[in-house]
Image (cartoon, rainbow, N blue to C red; front, side, top):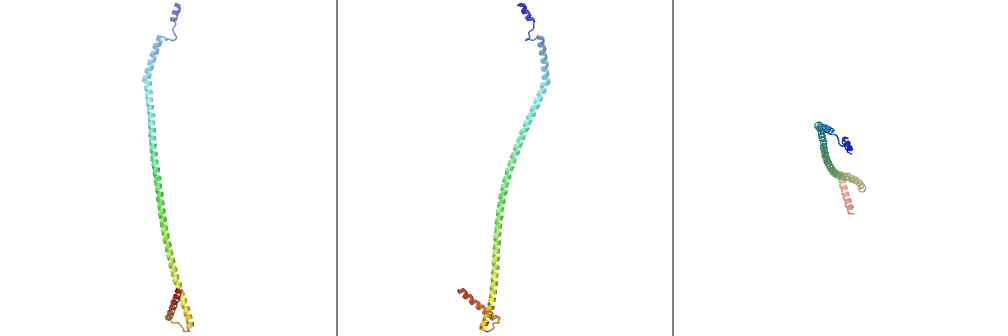
Length: 179
């Protein structure tokens, strides 16, 4: 059994490494660690910092762009509301002007209508007076002619004729008015 223990002591254990291998692995690890720390880690940190700054800058730019977009949207909304208000005011003004123009045109039309009616009445009165004058003259001539025939004397004298005609017409008017 002792020989078995010695043999077991002489064969290296697959789990426990040899001391020189352990020292060599440790030295290689330290060299690799120092090289990584001196060259690779600062470069990785610089890249990480640069990347972080880019990302933060992008986020900041995006936030600024978002703020500008919101500001532009607010301005647009305000301008749109202002334009709608102005359009409503213009519509109301146009309606007011239309009503005013309508009232003015109506007043002008009524004035024109009254003028035309007055002109028509004046023409009618003038025609009536003319017709009455013509009828009086015709009636006077007829009356003189008939009176001349009845009386048998000539009523050629203008003054006489007028007096006779006027008397006759006055009598006609009084008898016509009395009815």
